[in-house]
Image (cartoon, rainbow, N blue to C red; front, side, top):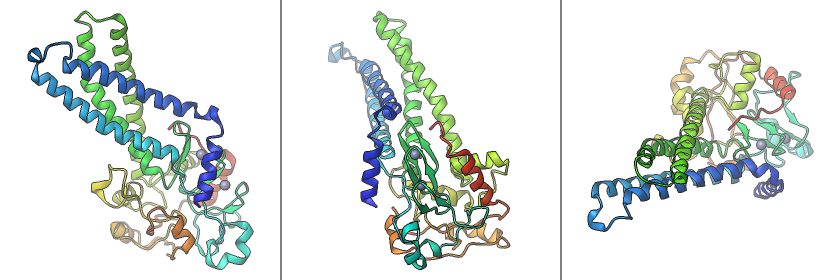
Amino acid sequence: MEGSDDSSLVLRFGEASKLLPVTFVIFMVVVLYFEYIFLHCMRLFQLDLPVEFREAQVVARGWWHLISFHIITAFLIYCLAKCILTCPGTVPEGKGWDQRTDVEEDTTGAGDVELVEKKHTGERRFCKWCLKYKPDRCHHCRICNLCVLKMDHHCPWVYNCIGFRNHKYFFLLLVYAVFDLTLVNTTMFDTVWWSTRVDVSVAMMLGLFAGQSLAAFLWVLITAFLGFHIWLMSKAMSTVEFCEKSLKKSSYNSSMYSLGTYGNICAVLGPHPLLWLLPIAFPEGDALTWSSKTASSSTTLASSNSDQPRRRSREATPSQQDASSGGGRSARTRKGSTENATSAEQAQTTTGEPQAAG
Ligand SMILES: [Zn+2]
Ligand SMILES: [Zn+2]
């Protein structure tokens, strides 16, 4: 697994032109960082005045802004790096998922998995590029040239697919970006206003206006995008599944992987609510099997859907457990059988993988 992860990283970074959006994101972060620290915070420190003439309250405000901004930005940069560098998770070699070894190992691997998403012929979904069978919620990304477990979307801004293993990093990247931009927008305007009333250079005034406008624009954009992802998370949908439902004009409340709002949040942000907003404690499971063994968090939902057909649970094979980042198992309940995965597969093959703006 690790070998294939490394080789996919080398392959990805071999194409320099595709790194332009990532470079642009990093450039934005650097510009806003320098504006906020060197134009705003430094002004509050009143370094041009002798110590005895500085207003203590204003200096304290400067420290508060400086420290808060650095803490949030450190988390943001960590999540950005993790989004770029973490393999989103792919189908393991052999053990029934690989067509080439399927005959010998079928009884211990994927052949034993009861899949929900199948072709219209009833056969298991198969990736002709990777020559592997696809687990439920797995899709092939033509840009990464990889089958991605619980694929959300391919994000050109981090030059990576967002899938099972880096979904929390991506979600928190949006959260920290909104936190950071909220701080900048609410505190830096004071400095922009100040620049219009004192004798500063035109370049500095324009720089402050440009920085403030950029921060406001990004805040609107990223807040809307985060809102969309919060909604998707609450409905247990990936962006790919959302696009499939849009194409089929089916209900957005009918995800067969839904565990109820709380369970759906845990499936993205991990099982500990106190750690949801920190880049630790990731969701349990291996993303290869989506079984119906009812978790404690989904008891209510499971009982309310007791008349619905359920998928049988099974233990993950050792290779699948290796592939898991959390090491545990996900417990999923199939909700509603009205949704036909066959048509989802048809939509997938005709439209290809959607590329969301994120
Ligand atoms: Zn593939
Ligand atoms: Zn991709």
